[in-house]
Length: 624
Image 1: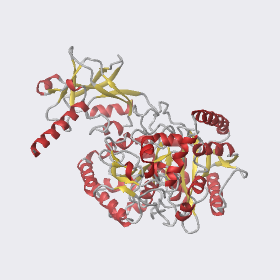
Image 2 (image 1 turned 90 degrees about the vertical axis):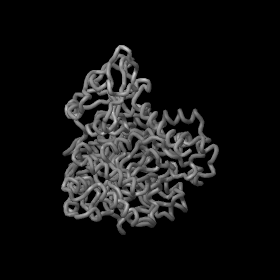
Image 3 (image 1 turned 45 degrees about the vertical axis):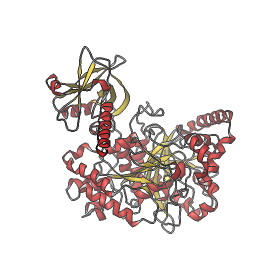
Image 4 (image 1 turned 180 degrees about the vertical axis):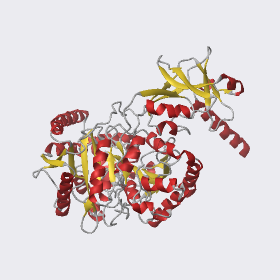
């Protein structure tokens, strides 16, 4: 974590504490605060803005306090949790076990049966989930007013839009209710709300953060995005959540971070003929100041014709990609379209006007435009654009919902179609105190490099974080985990995704490669008196295939991982069903005579599920 700001360092209670990660880390390590104090402060801050419909599902404080108390009991191992005691929120189109997922539609709401892997990684790293936030219905919109729960108000002026579709996620961070939040970004939903609420918004390279468990808008384009108070916090969250997911067909195998020039760089800016502010002269002035600040950091401006980018942007809503929005809710739309807000029903209903031929032709056109724009990266290192060309009041958007929404996507809609990374940054204040922001855009895999440059830019601007009085901490973001030699490790028990010891992998930046089975040569046992419950596995002549997850970690992290393995377990070599070998857990034979043989279940998850079923049956019989 970064070092705390002076304001945070002097805080004496959670009430006046900045929730940036540096300040929380300092408060925890000094012993001034416990995670329970931060949870209480988060709920108190939420109550202060109860008239702003930021939250859709806010569980009782007791559930968050239980999580905090568990962390507090494990505080001696704080450095194993890179997000220890950090409160966060998720957009309500992302699944969390046992909580409703509404996607901004009451009639669509269902209870999630599994937690999205991207959320699992954060929880395993010590973060504390507070609740789920409001959004433009079915993640369709850049305004934040398209919700039956009400329009989320801008954190700085309730008359103005907060930006969408991740409206609640952004405002929850800007108001200091949580440290960071997850949104989603198809057309700009992780960037426009950041700009309107004085936040950092990272739209990562497509496929780096899992979208399993996320109700998609356009599944082939969607990204889970990060809202944070500063770039260091965004980097800390990204480096935890950036993990391969074998269950996500769009998860990328090419994951090597790319670099950007640090001291001197070339940045593209829209040329005079193609820049657009829709008459907002104050935004134009603030963008000129932004360009000057980039120059002061070592940048050289390069005028860019934005025409081909705008052509790509128009295809996202005017072309057949709207049919992908329809595909996400096809059955619901067919049976219950009357429950969609009229503007959402109109937009998604346009899917019927496109044919399969239209889809192919549009994909060819995007490929042509992508090839045309690729040449730009020979001349510049990053593209700097306004995050949004202007801002509107809630009343203005409600009077002209489609045209004004489209304007806000001028500089965002093309990014995912062109497979680019983007970082929204605070960049000044308009008259009256409304935030203005810019976005830095670069080729895929430059996420960490953008965060490094973005930190320098944010720090130079002298703005406070969100709507707080706290300055940006000076310490730069942690770099992406170093590329080192790696070791593949097979896990079969408590280290599996979502289980109690998985954090021992994720905190070492291990990445999940795949789920598979061992060769049919092992027996699995439930070990006695093991906390948390763990299995042991032994190779035998009468064995079976056992479910296993294969993770990959750097060799520099492997030693510490092995050192934490308690007897009777150890590390040996496992043979997988395809004949390949990985490192994996083995068990000392002396304990097996007192352990239960659970091989018949085929894996630890199935065994745990059988215990839950047995408990449920017993409870039901007791009631009778």
